[in-house]
Each structure stands twice: as structure tokens, then as C-alpha cells.
Image 1 (cartoon, one colour):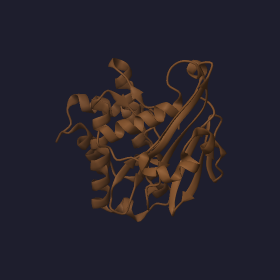
Image 2: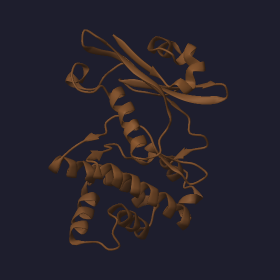
Image 3: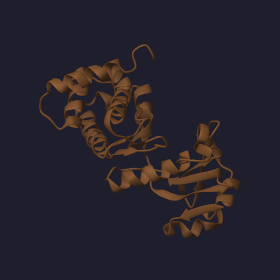
Image 4: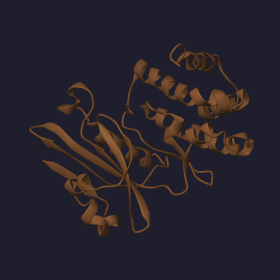
Length: 244
């Protein structure tokens, strides 16, 4: 059994994007590949689209129970949209099961024009990372969106600079979130620390201590650190110790 949803706005592309079978038949520029999925890029009518095709649901019993990664990914992008967190427009999505087991699935998103991910900027030592006002603007958006997720009890679980895009208008976008989920109690606390530690993993090499502190204050929505904030910052700084 296969379920597939194509946004009516893209009905003219139904020949290519109108079914799971047609999407898996598409050929394009392969960008990434791993044991569970691959990403290709195609262009139609002067617009580029990213197609993520999954042939695995995830580890262990996920093939039979729980959310397959592809379903988690499209549902999480929809959550971002609901919460007002900018993300890539969803064009189409769906999956196929056979005998209750996951067979394959796909997600298509439209390209966000003229964007680069923050990891690319960091690797290139881009001059924008040296501009205080640019950093402050991006930091404020990132802090607000991250706080919004965490206040809902949701953790991204892969909140790395490569999954954050910026455009020339200094707008920030969140992408690629197949492992994000809702948590509670100590589990949520641990996942929040992980999200913040993932962000700081690159920030500590590319931003000043003042800029990193400003981000945390923006995130916590406070003007000054509390004793609890200081304890949490210590946990963030220690999270990846010995694993880098």
C-alpha cells in the first residue's frame, strides 16, 4: 500500500512528482547517499527541487513499528511551519508499506534560492561571520526558533550548522530533521543540552565568547545568567568532551 501527497500548487509537475513510483524513477544530480537514503537534485521549469528517497525506515523495529524516518522528516518540517520557523517548502511526500513493513518513501522540497548553510560559511571562514551585526541578526533568529521548539517539548536531535541555511536577506531556515521528536522530563532536558551543544560545537571556533553568551541569553530570554543557566552552560560545554 502506497500513500502519496502532491501539493496542488505543483500539479503541473504530476508527471514527475505525482506518485511514489515516478519519483523513484527520476534521475538527477546525486548529492548524498547513505544506507537508508539518497538525495538527488532535479530542475523543472527553472526551479530546483531536492528529492530525498528512503529505502530504509531506520534502525531495528522501526521498519514495522513507530515512525519511519521519512515520515518523521515531513511531519517535523510541518511542525516548523506551524510554529513559524522558516523551512524549505514541502512539494510532495509519502511512503509505501507491504505486509505492514516499510518498503520505501520520499520527500520533495523546493530549493531555497541563494542560500548557504552555516557550516559552509564556517569552513570558508566567510567574512559575514566577522560582522557583528550579521551575527547578531542570525543569532537572534536561531535563538528564538530553538527556544520555540524546546518550549513545545521538541528536540531537533541534529541541530548542526550544516542544517541551518541563510540567505542574502539575513533570513535563517531550518532543514533536515528526520530524528527530531517530542520528549519529556529528564529525557527532554538531555536532548535540549545536546541541541545546544551541537550548535556550540562550531560556534566555539568561529564566534567570540561574547557572541556565544549573547546567543544563550537570547535563547533563555533573559538579560543575565541565573545559577541554573550557569549549570546548564557547564553541561553544554562538557557534552562533547572526549568525543571530538
